[in-house]
Image (cartoon, rainbow, N blue to C red; front, side, top):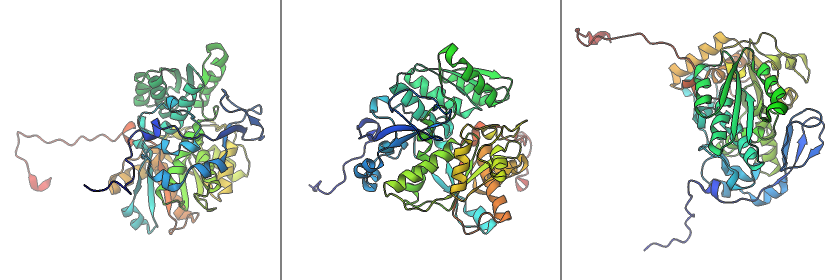
Length: 423
């Protein structure tokens, strides 16, 4: 009989969800004014009307968490519990938040004469998009804080994630989306237990309805950055990415930017990882990718301002980044500037072309917002803002299967002679 000594303890699939871990949240902080708010209470915005950021005892995290301990945990986003706000296992609402893969694009890199191109494919998450990361955290904290009814505006994927997680733990949801939201999104939101309304306007028009109904309907406003915890869920993209690259960061990150929660969250993640000595001071250049038909961040970046006025007549095939005005505009622009990155707009034609190119060359089906990052990368190579030697990560924020795909009309009649040589 062989000795069991020296063997690692067995990792069980649900260890991250069932083993209590020490928690280190100290307070919440206004992202603009810096004033503090108590943890473990229901909050929306700060007194200044700005997003609240969760703060941790990072010295405590550093003592409690090691890279080796992390490596022995199941590969899901809850492996980073010490850097997350949910204190008790009983409050975690999980539908299986896997670590998403990094997929390399070697053929396209060769064709472009470029360095390493990697896609972080967030379409593998529950409900098929990266919105699952933010909403699983918001809903878990909503459960912990006793919230019974949540409402939000959505361009589709966020609403689907909120509906799924809230239904899983018995929280009621009411969701408002622009009238032209893709049918698959509206259907999945309703089917997963929410009450969904189509509104004759854009996402910020839907947001006004949520805000105005807060006192009258009694729901909690779960709009982007109007609660503190979606950033904490989205920051796991940065934690995962650094771990997957051996605690290194890439040279450049191209991120499809609407409300910008993920870009803000990743920037926060890198700062926290440095504070606990998991990474050094190197940061990726953060690139905010927008559509030419809705590019408020690009306009503000180029104007050198910290706030981005509303973009009128917003339109693009990439519905997820059709956000005319972002509450966290100054946080997005700060991250971009501090990282020596930039904001860039790409046309719908280039988005469509990029989607087709990656699918046909590499077999990877991106969503339009993800395709925008590849289009932006190519544009940045051409204008010299990114070097061909740079190691880049493109974020594909949802499965391409949720979006309209080209029709195929080719047929074959099995009752007639088949010219196999021509097939």
